[in-house]
Image (cartoon, rainbow, N blue to C red; front, side):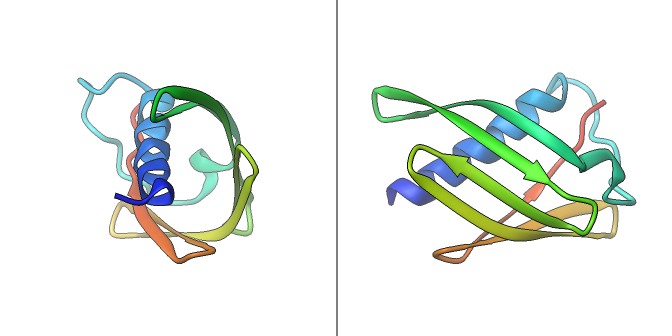
Length: 99
């Protein structure tokens, strides 16, 4: 598994953990509004822990920064789910919102 793919998996996990308890059912995402903001936390890569910063803007753009990597992308909302696409290189996944 490449370092970037591992980081993106960790990012998704971090986002889920930061939003709320995993035991609660996911809240359908019907607009970008509940995701907009600045999020931060840590990710573990190998044996080191690094800071991770995620900004989601009202225009559905995002900026993710960890270590010396900055990635830009977009967020889409459809069918009650939010997904993201980032580059470089192309990365994609989904968000789940827990309240």
